[in-house]
Picture 1 (cartoon, rainbow, N blue to C red):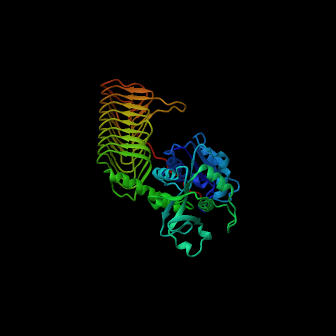
Picture 2: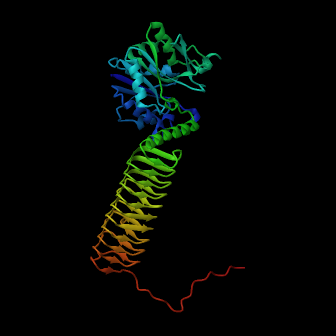
Picture 3: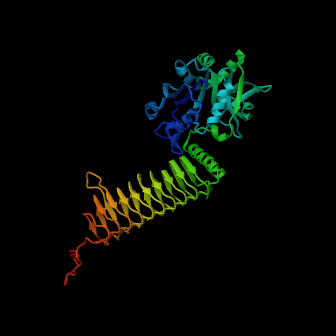
Length: 457
């Protein structure tokens, strides 16, 4: 199906009370406009055009190089005026033109596809929905069941305002006819604007069938005009994601306290506690448990692993049966083997810990390789940065690093070595030996602790 997709994104969004263009505000980690573009992607449109206006430079820069064309609407004189600006860019070889709104982010791909199919290059297809409170929406006017027009809320009579079926602002039209209709629009109305909805009467007058397609739910067609509406749609979106996960068997402690801001793939018997945030691409294996208040971004967590509360995981891989947290931080490049333990206030960056390795308390591992079954003591760190370059530390298998040690990279700790607590290690430590590097303890007799001088006067 050859389709032009047009997305109207020129509005100022005054009620957002923001310096940023409305369509660049984020919902579930993506801009409103990105949501709409993602929904349209399933149509494999021959041409996708975004109409910009307020904040045009920022919007166009945000989506440059993504195969999207831009047309500016300056000034903004209504929806019909917006489509007038895009007429020269519409390809007649694509018989259907689908018109979406950049501030209506939750439209489903299947809904957009069904609307385009209803048009099929021959009919004017309108996406409608029935609302209990239709304030602000254009009403669908019918005679004997057939659509005869759309009346904007501000121009509707008291009787027309009782109509619950509303136009969502989304339509699909025959391309050639759309061009003709919008160029014939007039602004003889209360707002002195060019209404795209006036083309319905033109289609009826020409005998072009006007059909409707219905959105699956209200959330699909709700727009964002204020921070309150954005927050409402955020929770609706998150509830949609939560229900999809629970239908697949995931146990969410409270679906109202869950945030998915990317793609979350879950195995069987996954449990997720409250206030967890998932960003980017996250994969959770069978039996994974995520404690409360965790933030997990672009991570792979294998079967049976437990992420305890208040843990941050980003760009990391966690092996099967591993235990992480609470209050731990795995940074990009952290790779944990099976049964690894990372405890409270431990930070791991660009480091690999082999099976059974442990760092249970108050430690830092940066640019480090840790062998199997090694134990990394409380308060110990790898000093991996010399002020200009990063260097690597290699810790062999079955190593025991005591508490409060500093390993100054580059350095290698041999298999089975023990590093005495409080040591600063700047040279390689041999395998199977105890290495201690700290000053001899001394007691200075007669030493007096400094005292504050008495205050004058």
